[in-house]
Image (cartoon, rainbow, N blue to C red):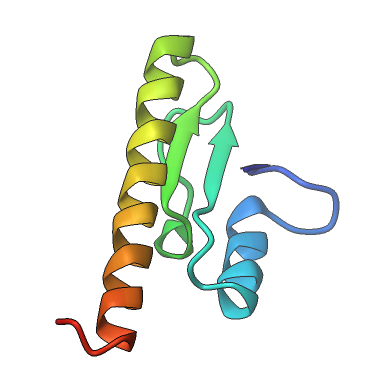
Amino acid sequence: MSDHLLQGKTGTELAAEMKRLKPTIPIVIVSGMVEEPEGMEHADLFIGKGEPPPIWLKKISDVLQKSRCQAAQSKTKGAGLD
């Protein structure tokens, strides 16, 4: 999870770097901006700081669940069980 406005780069630039290193790790960008920033194709989720906590929790839970499902599918394919 990263803020979008960082010193020296943006959260989406950080997301791109992280995805190159660890493509399976879900990346969440948080920002005071209302609209998704450019470069979000490298992140898994955008959350606006103005959104209420229950929405944050639901969105993050959904991203983590999706990540777990993808990891399980990768393990199944790697074991020849697909």
